[in-house]
Image 1 (cartoon, one colour):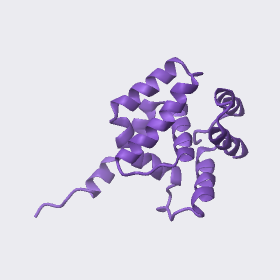
Image 2: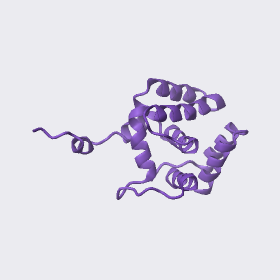
Image 3: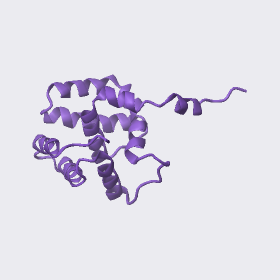
Image 4: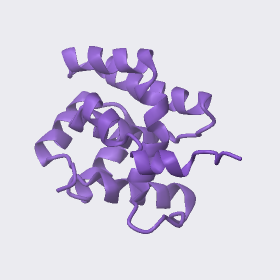
Length: 153
């Protein structure tokens, strides 16, 4: 079963972000989609950009996005430290907002423009499954890595 937020978790985040309209909009979409990160990300992307890009067979927009962000996020000590700080104080609005802003910045630094609503979904996903699981789960397989090798002459 894919990771998703429960109604109680969505309501907890609503309390953390009482005055943050963009975050509340993301939470409303998550609630409407029964906490599904995949469905919510698809909806947000469609609202922002019109339609979903064509995905490789068997892959979702969330999987592709997470794969693209893994190296930047998992290799970024500052972001990892922020996740750790937030996990120690999970009701902190500044820490959670900082994670979202940091993800947008990390992505932009690595030429991967990331809209704030999409970053919010990704951060909530990472917090749900845990950073270590995220970094391990989205790590490219040996098969994927070998397909990117430059052949020897």
